Length: 248
Length: 248
Image 1: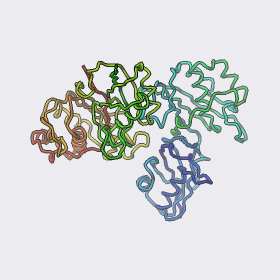
Image 2: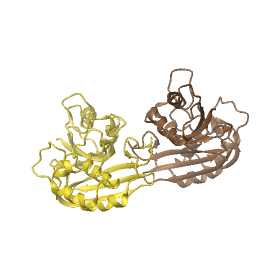
Image 3: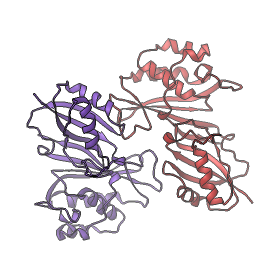
Image 4: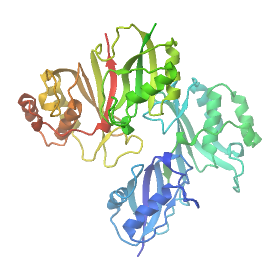
């Protein structure tokens, strides 16, 4: 009998073309996981991820599931997997789940963090995981701006052009900004789902607000316009990390 | 007239054979800095570093000095240098100093940090800057052990074999251990100077104490024996960072 496993995966997305397997030869996280699992399972394994992170985006808590033909105790799965994975992908946890568990369809929400290093100079210690903004950001202004985007809205203005989804309405449960010791500003977003590039455009719009290139009243108009051209720039992928996926 | 400049440099030592220029072709931090400065100075520049960090060791506050033939305002030096440096070496600060300033001879002390990630699994976000210890460490025991090494001692037992120095007496002004949020334990050492591999052997000995492979009374005997064979293992270079160099 095939067993369904749910895993939590952390990865440094710097050297990958994102989560999902591509038709060309570029390397992806999903591909690395499937290759490692094939060694363990001695047969092909298909891995389903909760979120299809883009090229360069990281994860501290990506969730995925897959079926194995071999019955391995759940607590042995991370060790077995990590011994086959490169050191920029780490399985942190595994559990056996019912056959009907699907990491993407069953996800009730996700938490992402956008990390800004607001400093004259970048830092070698976090350079792959932050977006370095040199000019001083007004954090209080950004925190007030964040309140405008919380809740259920049509986020079409914050969706990359060319993406086709049935509805562009999404619910941001929480959008918080923090100052961290080393000069970082964290944008923590929890929501039921996100449009293509939505968080990076949101981060870009908040950064432009913090740089006083955008005033608060303008932000409401941006949302209402449903026009991508009115929102801010798409902040770089390297600053974004998928922190957690929520299930019932 | 040639101007002496003092700079603060941060680097990720992962991809370098340490600070000092080698006779073979391996890349070093000093070499990268001299190459960058040669572009700015339009002539060869010799860089003197306060500490000759080993292969794989990092720095948050390495201090160096060099003479330029061109007179550049101090605040322009970091920008000019960083535009020529790879992204794993960052000049954070520069100032003009008297011609007799020598970053190594004038150094009064140094602070190093050894970062341990005490966790079942490594973390992709800090993996290049920590040593991952899987088994649970007894931090309180390590903190008590640290007190034994503080002060002025003959540290011959904590010095890599084969190094030739006049005296193996050094003064550790402060040796503190902290638990950090993400599961890291930091060993912060401030001293007037350190023998070859001394901090890494000290870290290894403290780790073995935290794993209860060494009892506290044994540690005094190790110091007194002046015999490298009695001390702990040499903890990996990647966990070590030169934090700061002190001057009068």
